[in-house]
Length: 329
Picture 1 (cartoon, rainbow, N blue to C red):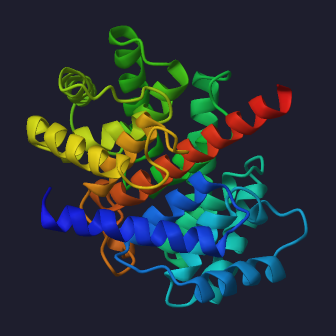
Picture 2 (cartoon, rainbow, N blue to C red):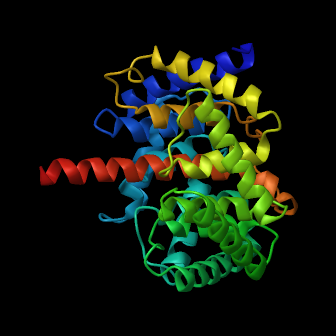
């Protein structure tokens, strides 16, 4: 394993342990995904700062706010790495209020609002929220039974792109049709993957074929990548990697290393598919230390944000499914 990748893996474990200390009664998977967000910023999590940001959310939001639900750990982490946590939270809450007038509120909407608050200038935020609504409505019309609350976060990320609503939706639909015709991936996951692929330039067929090729190469190497909510991350890897054979080798190395760490092994709380997805995220180029400027809000600039959000959504939804199953058993 490359020294840089090993260092990033070790930082993830350190941040995971700190997150577990700061969120002792929190969901272990959500703590882990938040630890990745901290790691992507090349930051060491600090318990005192995290607790301070968590308390700030508690004080500034209403009793039943979705900022205090499953998104709490992620939002707290965003604040903890911000140079002005109080300003970011106020901005995120304001964007959230705008979004609630256009989209149904859910556990996922605060994440979308915070992403817009982090990455978009104050003058353009209302424009991006309106664009998010337009994209969501178009996708909902195309796929009324597949489109649900979690898609609002992906729609917000699509809205950050310089591409028009028509370009984004047309591209996403082309990717969706191609993938459903040529794979057996679950349609709901294919829809999320198609949203990610729409952010990148190139012909829809070629982008889809890259994802399919990477999946088959991983499978041939004994790495059966998940086709559930892990798929968006596979798309990002396919779009940002050049040597799939080398990528498969590194994914195997990172996944094996993680499997020997507490919580990642056979009896751990992280599934093999989630571990492989996380390994892919750790191999992504590290996020810049400065927030993305408005003029740089193009496809490649938001890839890391998409990766973080795709993983967080995957973990949030798998945690929800697990909790529901346990309650019904």
